[in-house]
Image (cartoon, rainbow over all chains, first blue to last red; front, side, top):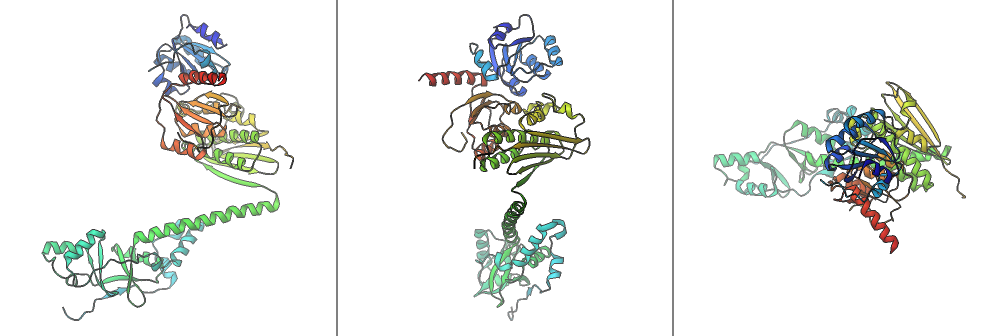
Length: 111
Length: 333
Length: 101
């Protein structure tokens, strides 16, 4: 599923667009150490952690789409980092639970 | 062996002041009320209150080998030698060792027992007994009554255990008295309830405990559910702030007929830009704090949002004080 | 599963969040909190918002103190091997099935 399709499903807006960014699975989490331990490659990360560290973790895990919930604003350094590392950011007003349900056609991320 | 006349030393009676002066516990070090309680307990309790009354002993003519067996079975290191309540001596582990070494384990206890014994009188105050534990290396002392009959045996552990138990009982009594006292006093002026909690910096295992207590207290008083929820949220946020951002402080809960007030006061480091701190999403939390799930920067703005009145004061290097007031809706009483 | 064993409350809302300060923002009653945060904080925050239960994901080991706090505060605590995402989807399916029944 491409970032644009994900964006449509969660009724959000694309804050950082990256060509070809897509995801095959979904991981919901806010604790960076937890994400690193359990999120798989090619996943869409659903979180409220709207800061630069999230992008760092995405590169380590191999995820290229981040869905920020509760319409949390994306700080400029996070947006720049995302562009640099090729991670698309989608911002949605939904909660993590709602976003999870919206994307439920995708399988869970396994590790 | 000739005439039987073992020397038994007894504690000399001296007046109370001397006892206190020589007591190993330093009352000044304890400070305040606790020292008074301890001194009182040490005076009030006598050796007879704390000693073991079932004394395991052995007769004079029994052998050292029998003494060894008894000591091993009962796991004691000192065995009084007594008959019909009269104390004649004491067999210690040392005597057994010497006996094994010298090969006289079949000898009678009376041939090898210690006879220069220090004993305590049953009516002696514990303060006194402690002094003897300090001055002598013996693990335990036989206890005689005023008729010089062996009535018990006392070890330092017995004393400590009894003291600790009594101390905790006394402290609980005191707590109940002061708490009740406060409420009495306050009720005479206005109807209000006040309680404080200490918050220790970086003590994340306890972080939030005051807020949990506050919520419990408000629910007990059947205060409106939505108000309880708002107070709990503000209290929690402010408590976590003290915990992760400050050098430590207190949470204070004040309940009157009309309002609930939460005050969070810490000892520093203070907030340089209060307006910035109160904004959504701004935080000085480091990565470690964030990894634990805190530091999202919502604390002050959350507290402000849920309270009816919000006040914050701070001085860099000195303190920060945040106060949230919640109005209790009038119920038809 | 820890808790005070009183009659279970129905789930009013589901919150899947690891940032406790964010959890405090939810006004709903009887929240079921899904989280990866296996700490006392999850329980304490749950208590503050009057949550009806806490689920910890990814089979994370629950510390003794966490279980004790859950018992003391009367909050049912469940450990799940599922990921949060998986649980969200399955719970939702279960709720729908319940409604239809």
